Image 1 (cartoon, each protein chain N blue to C red):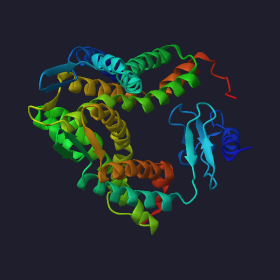
Image 2: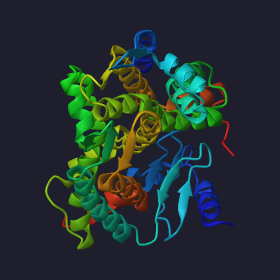
Image 3: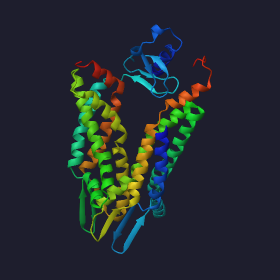
Length: 227
Length: 166
């Protein structure tokens, strides 16, 4: 059996304490599936294992190899790429001898200049504020964890980090850029610049960083650190 | 659950101006084109850019409509308690694909930023851009406020109390 199936079988055979005597009902020893509320006994997964709810398929816990190191490495890479992506030119468009070179922030500025301030703020959140918050949040939490320490307010940062995940739309922005490139190529000569590739790299690194470590592992390491 | 439904209805209402108003207009020497979302899709199709037309159509028409249908289905599942496993999968998929509808809004933002050549050629955002961004945000909030455990609660109520899960 693959590790996840073995773990799922293990989790499924752990008795759900519904009709069990009161002694078994210790809150710390139990885990409720976040998607279907089924109760299981808490079990720490082995390295490489993943525990899955047998009713609804939600991942209950996982323990990826070298999770902390990989997550931190990718987060650090994401941070540098984010800086490059925002401080270097992104695209240049040339029509009849006139050239317009823009950075990523220009998308926000252009909307603001055209009277669409509300939309400018939204786009700024989705492609600038959200990834910045996520990258800095990851580093704030993970770097101290490498030496088993934690900085003040790390728990709040962790909550904000996983809450912001929904509002990070940099991959969608990249697809938008690709569609625009096709549109623009008809009317003008278009060139992609340094920031374009840094942005693509940022997407890969940020996704890899979030995927490298399981959320529950972050929380349990935070609780063990310095406390 | 009321919040889920309220947000979904608000999104559905906002979907009307998002499609009726133009999303982007370009002004240049001798031309002045203003396009709605669907108008843009048709334009790309006619120009032969089939992939682009398909992407915009899927992102801006198919996905929002499917999202609203999914949320409706999920709310019905809370009442009936049927197929909890399938419904939970539907819930996860809805949460995943929702943000991709923003593509069109970003396309507008980039085009407006890139094509600023004064009277030679200039692109401006239309009212539909903000409305459509609103639709995406509201459907995302609606899906986020939905509690999938309610489906399982409803499903379990249907079975007798001493029934043991396999």
